[in-house]
Length: 103
Image 1 (tube, rainbow, N blue to C red):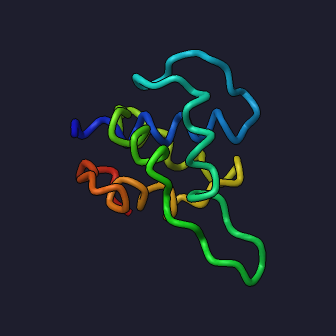
Image 2: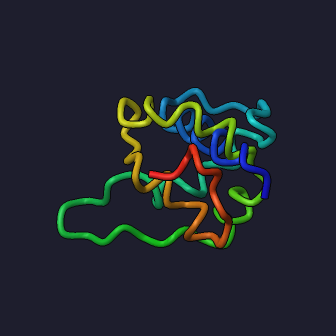
């Protein structure tokens, strides 16, 4: 997977959780596709365990331009996204993240 896919994933997650989800492509994926990754990157309710990413989420991660998404990693907390959870998605999906995107 190209190193730039984490950037795309992170940017899409930002837009998704900010309520700006449209059918627009961002970092090579449709922003609406990221909805399937929401449970794996948002903090779980008290006492609950963070779920693993679904197969559908991992499919999105594999198609994403991670380096593009990674450029937005510092904005994630303001949208309710746990940065560590978002940065862990590629590895959980069997994708090697680019060095600059590792937590």
